[in-house]
Amino acid sequence: MITFTDKELIKEIKERIGSLDVRDNIERRAYEIALASLEAEPVSQTYKLNELSGNSPVTPAGWISCSERMPNDKQYVWCWGKSYGWTECDTFEGYYDWSRSKWWAVTDNEEEQASKVTHWMPLPEPPQEVK
Image (tube, rainbow, N blue to C red):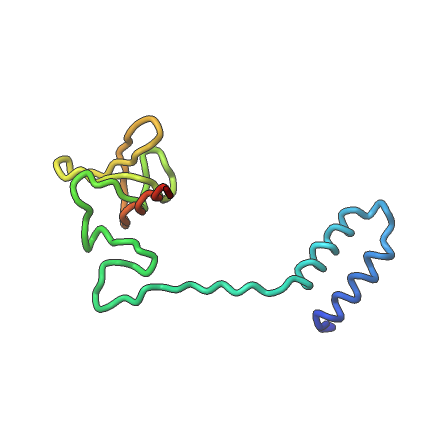
């Protein structure tokens, strides 16, 4: 098996693209995609996470574990769990009703009982209108 450097691969792909027949659209497109990925500049993703001290119930992304702390009664929060009929967990707006000991998902038309909510976080403040 021969190993090529990126520079060698770029040269080889450019030569092959030039020699393709007009009817070889799929192969041409595959070479173009490979060439674009080889020539692309690397992107660095840097995440700045708040430091956690001790046994904080807040995860780095701001999620609060339900086993550590629950929101105030009927306080609208962002939830991680399932709503009625969902097959997988996802995020949704909801609240916990202390009198019924249940989570509720807020949808466009109604509120649905939610289940398996494991984490929540406060909703962000709404944007302020600039005067």
